[in-house]
Image 1 (spheres, rainbow, N blue to C red):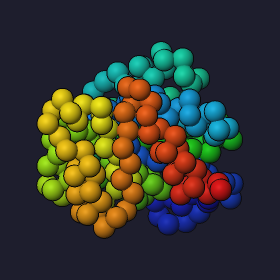
Image 2: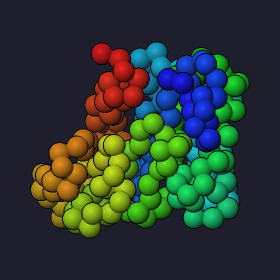
Image 3: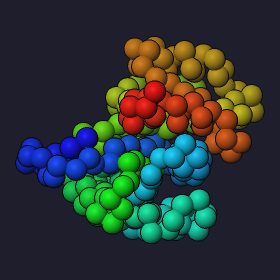
Image 4: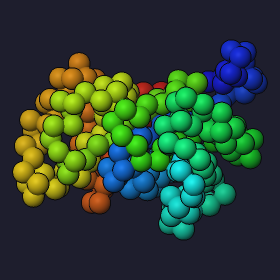
Length: 216
């Protein structure tokens, strides 16, 4: 796709990387999801890079760099300096610049994953920044999360319910939670994952290939 600049003009004529945001509350499993998506996407031949966001640290970026899953040079860190949602929604300039820099350094990159620092259910991504974004919640946070109808839950292109293995241990009716999530989202995609075991990851990648990379 041609990437539009902030003033609405086409920044360049080359095909730009798709940008996928990953947001959600603290502890929902965003970084674990990224760590599972990286090898799954690379296995399917996707040219990939990653940006992490946090308040004043680069801890998540360093974790991914040390993982050995991806060339460390392909992982950038953005320090928000304020609430994490500020740099993914209110003023995404730092993330846009980080993504542009990765595209300059790696001209063939097809997909950039942008992980937001942990925030609340109101965290959403600017459409100036991402082409597609997913919101991650986990069953340990309670099966009432969908009923709270937070903007992240409602507006995301994809809702991921993570840590499904914990449902019987925390008294969560997973089937009901899934159905309520589909209901508040008007049946837009809701996928179940257990990132610790890697369950459900291929389904997420299938959706990204179909809806973001337009591969059949």
